[in-house]
Every structure is written in C-alpha cells, then in structure tokens.
Image (cartoon, rainbow, N blue to C red):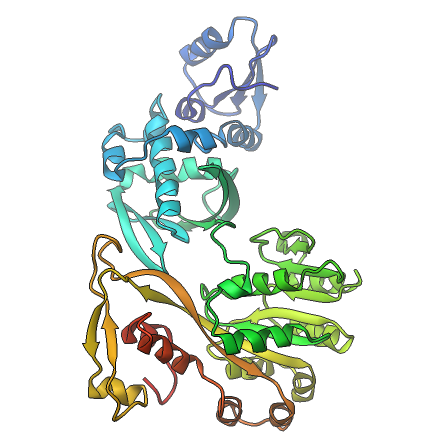
Length: 493
C-alpha cells in the first residue's frame, strides 16, 4: 500500500472523517462511520485521487487507528530535522494560524514544525522530559533539564487540542480516547542518531497532560567507569558484582540514575559466558547479548510473574527493574538462595533504609541477612558552571554543618551566565554511599537491629551520602545548597 503520493492534510482528514487508504490504481477512500460531512468534501477528495476511487465506511475506532498509522510519521524523520532550521520557538508560535481549532487548518505544517522544534530543543539542551500541561487560559510547555523544570513556552489554551492530538498521532495512540491514560512511543532520527521518546498522556480538567521522556542511548553512560563514582566505591561495587549469588540493590528517588547504574553494571557483567535476563518496566535501552523482557500488566505480565518465568530460563544473573511488593521480594530471595545474582532497585532514601523497607514489605530478617550482598544509594546533583561559579569563604554555619570547625576553606556559589542559560549549573553528576553486608552487618539484620544501629555500623568507616556530597562541595564541583536540596539526613543539615 502506498499512501505517499496523495495525502490529505491531517486536519482535513480528522475533521471531516475521511482518509485516503490507498491511492494506487484502484484508489480507496475511508469514511468515518456516523460522521456528518458536506457533499463537497467527497467531491474534493475524489478530485484529488481520481474518479475511479472506491469508498469504504469504517467504524470510528478502526478509522482512528488507520488515521494514526497513516499520519504517525509526519514531521519525525532525519530529513525533517536536518533540513529544518529550528530557529526561535517564539517565532514558530507566531506562524501558527489563529483559528478556533487549529486542526481545521488545511496546512498542518506550522504545528508539525513547532513540535519538531520542541523535540529538537529538548535534545539540544539535554532535557530528560518535555511536559505539555493544559490550564484554563494557557498551555504550558516545560523542559526538565538537570532535574529542574523550566517553562520555555506559554501558548493560548485554544492550541491544546492541536498539540495534544498531533503528539498522540505521532505516538500511535487513540486520538478519540481522552478519558483514560495512554502510553506510546515515538522513534526519531536526529542528526544521524536515534532517539526514543516515551509518551504518557493523562486526562485533566482542561485537556490531556502529556509527558514525553527522551531516551538517547548515545548520551546515556552505560559504563561504570564513566558514572563518576569515587574510586574506592567503584572498586568495592565491582567486587560486589563478582559475587556468584546474592541480592545487590540500587536505591534512591525517581530520577536519581538508578536504572543507568544497573545498565552499566549489566554491561560490565555481559561477557557472553553467563545467561543474563531482565524484567523491566519499560525496557529503556537495548543491550546486545542480554535477554530483556518488558512488563505488560494488561495481559498479566507483572514483575512477579515475569520474574518467575525468567527463573525457568536458566539464568545466571537476573535484573528486576524494581522490587515493589512482597511477592517480587520473596522471588528475589529464593533466586538468590538458588545461586543466582539478582540486581534490582528500591525506592528508599538511604542504603540502610532499604533494609527497613524490605522488612516492612514482610520479608523475614533471617532471609534478608542471608541474601543481601550490598546496597548502593545515589543522588544526582547539579554541577556548577565553570565559567561563572563564584568562590566564597566558608562561614561558621557551613563549617559546623560539614563538621569542619576550625578549618578554613573555599566554597563556590552559582551565579549564572550565557553559557549555562543563567542557571549557574551545567550538567549533573552522582554522589554515592555503598553498604556492603559483611558478617557483622548480617548479624545485626538477623537480630532486628534498629536503623540507627545499622547505619552506625555500616558507616563507621565508610562515607555516607551526605558526606559524599560535602566532599564534592569542597572540591568545587557543586554548591552546598545543591547538596542540601538533594540530600537531607535526620539530625544533620
């Protein structure tokens, strides 16, 4: 089927419920069922495709799917990005036609150019997410750069259906369904490299909110050596990964780089002499030589059920995207006891807090003590811009907070310049704490020691997350306020 030679504009096709399904020797026109249309619409379409055209009536659901399939790739191609001068986003907005509903426009090019420019701008600024947020009077578009959201466009609310419908078409979502959340994907080529865009929609009072997450494998650091871990933590983490069995957990809040660390660990372990399998939600990056499976709750493929299936595939190493419930935790324990190395993530605030979290889920202390090999806790902090960071002498409060009374040292503060878009920061790096479960720690876990006692034992000689951040502050890589924003500990800060 060739749909490239004759193409109605997207706005015309959607608004009038008519689409060219095939424009070959026997043209085929699809009409949406139960949609009223003026006779001149068909006259115009037949004039475009030829008077030998046949007409087929489609149910509304099937029509919407075919419409999405035919128009999904509009504006998302290597040629589009490489030949298009993105220019200033505001100038593209000025080029949009002023209509009650932009989809009624015969020419969709301004809308396509705007969305292309948004994605290109996000890639250029290394944004992780694009937020499209409708409100009563405006449509706000924000980018998450270095973990912080900033608004780059504020459009009139009348543009909401235009922008959201076009993005949904690109992601092959049901454009007629606006009552339930939907998830989709857009694959784009930008400057010769591939970027995956995960699209999530959520109904709201003034229209559908859309978040697009950009996954650029070339930017992702899938090498442990390049994650910026201090050498002592890196070497001890590598030691953990050499264990034949046990559970290794990476913990931290959403967006702290846990998945990237796990992928880097798998890349190190991927030596083709072991069977490595994963169950993820979703699979973010494909790694050659590793069997990756995606969670699909719609058909009953949960972390737990996928984990069980994986264990029947004779794995040596298993990576579970996240331990969310007691069922998954118990399977991880059983896999570890059966001689497998299990890697996963847990949402907790500290390495020691992970032990408490697993106990709260219902895992027995004696099972935890015999299977946990280690826990890596991490955060991402913003890196000070080298061009404009300002040195200041540490005051008494900062010295007390950093347990450095009586010492004189220099701290650096963000200022803001053209190079960092007036933010004072440019890029992010990780700070880490690593808990290795030795015999003494296992005994404490087995005996139900308090979290304070576990922390006192684990970090009597090792660096905690907060003090790891303080080290980077004294090295001039980030500011004290940035570390305190990201890491807070009871009794400290």
